[in-house]
Every structure is written in structure tokens, then in C-alpha cells.
Image (tube, rainbow, N blue to C red; front, side, top):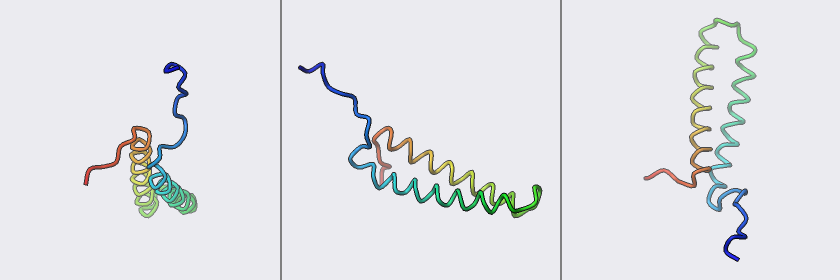
Length: 75
């Protein structure tokens, strides 16, 4: 019966706080995207907000990878 183990498709037990952080980051990204869309294409403010959006996206992806791999950062 050892060969009948179903693969784990759900969230890891300790991944929920990270998932909540991802949700918060996604909300911030959505708000930034709305602000960016209202600004002229080559305005300095838009460029700064786009850089912040990229940083938030990178942080979100890092947390997502951490959940997938089941690891937390070392203190």
C-alpha cells in the first residue's frame, strides 16, 4: 500500500502566512498599476512607480517560490 500515496496539491501547512503576504502584495500591485495607467507614458513619476511595481512583483515571486519549495528564510 505504500505506492498509493496521492501527491500533495494543497497549500503546505505553514504556507498560509506567506500566502496572505502574497495577497497583500497583489493588492498593492493592483493599486500601483491603476496609478501608473493614469500617468503620461514618459513621466518621471510613472517610471518611479513602475520600478516599485517591479520590486513588488519580485518580492511576490520570491515568496511564491518559498511556498512551493516549502522553505522559510533563515533568520
